[in-house]
Length: 370
Image 1: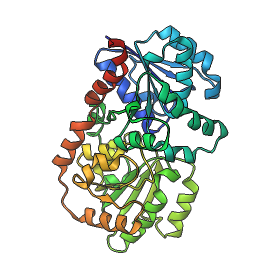
Image 2: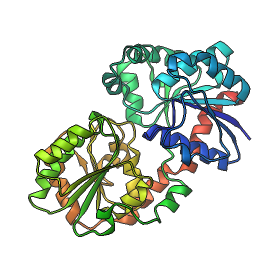
Image 3: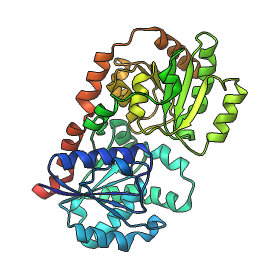
């Protein structure tokens, strides 16, 4: 039995937090001991964390204040291996582990396209963190774990990080819990009573997710196929997106219901999942949709979609930022037969939590076996 500690900022509704919860739960199921340390506390993913995971909430107001509390928590846990996720958490955890002489125990994880992610973080402290992180990564004994080859290559191409400093591991997207959740009925009224084809998208209502482009594409779709669009998520662009829906005359055909407590059931009931992101790390929602046999189309954005969809062989890849092509492919996909079994098999073969946890543990515990 291994003792593994996962360090995060909190358990908010983001993809990184969701994946770390699923990873921790799988490690528990595998018989490992898992401590999860949150720099702050709580979050919408907290209820999904196994009760067997030892959750430690430091309740620090800022990551900058976390050094001493994090150091004390790690000393109490005495882990065999430590996994940190997200750039600012990677940096503070690396500094803390260095003070303990534990750098060999530490693995850090990059979840997004580094060169693009840093551009949307304007806070001065975060800018300094993004500047410092690659130099720390280059000095760490263990390689950075990237969620896709694209994320790994971006890190190498745009920073001082070398190819030998990065490895990749698939996200633990599909679990026993998601399989059970998919068997539940949807809650959105448009998916319960489907009087017309329904497209869904999922993610934070932010610039990164490109929902402004999706709305423009969907407006074109409406001219030929009466249909509906549901965008699940919350974020800083809600008012702007609602105004855009109104300006496009789509108020009767577009819904922004906020977060779903069982998104995979909503996906299963939908006719199509669309990824319109400007950038990603490894878009988990594509995998979730495929795991329940729902057709997907995706922008060929940096990064992850091309890898997941095997260069467009599994499902359509749309020319990056080409809104007209996105509209055309959405129309085409709504009218064609979906090969549900093939989509499901592809998702399960690569992105199961069992496969992911095995690979992650191999990286996290590698230094301990030397």
